[in-house]
Length: 304
Image (cartoon, rainbow, N blue to C red; front, top):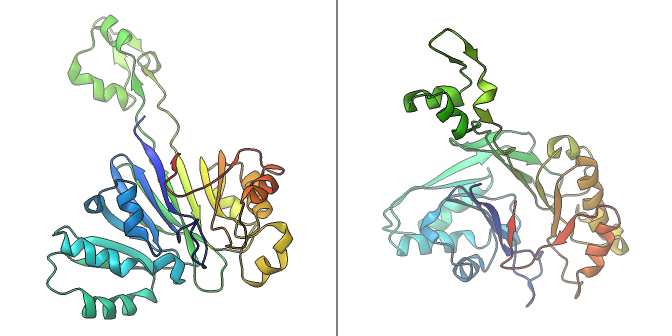
């Protein structure tokens, strides 16, 4: 199977610490890199991860809190200084557009590439990116400002050919693609050989959901149903439930309940409050509800 990975660049929350960077991730799928959120320090983390700046053509910003977007203008500037020529596409709540224009007018002159801004509706599910192998859809979240997550889904692939059966029936190479597309085979004597003899199913499509800042929203289980890997904010533990409710964040236990109810493959926790010196308390809280839970950490590479 071709790689489908998540590179964690930062998994802290709003208050900077020496242990965690602000929110940023790179989703790597089939040779393409997608940057999700761009907090302070993102450029340094990209270098530490040895991920090439030039390979990022699409940036998704979940909402306009600084720990998710303060690194964006710096990254845009660096890409220009590195001689970028390919367009850079930015998907974000509409409010970022005018601010980004003003920043670029001040700091980004004479660059040889275009920044293409795409305003997204944070209140509905919509496809915002699609190519031959991937679809990216927004996930409406509930936070103090307009906010959405992002769902990356592989498109189904054609079944795999059984080479032994192709050879046994002497099927010419020019017909193999037709067989993969579902065509049966007719022998010279008119005998029909069913397509199922020549193929076996491709691996199920993989999916990754990124749920940044949001209060616990049970209704998301419908959107997240069966997702391979879910990253969900766990800013607080249940010891700070009132803080979570006040600031529209989630506890680790609430993230785990959503993972359980959505029947996801595995849950990744992140966006930790700076009040926790040891996130194991968050992990233990979540694992008591959903066993297949893991903590994220800077420079982790997660196999979706």
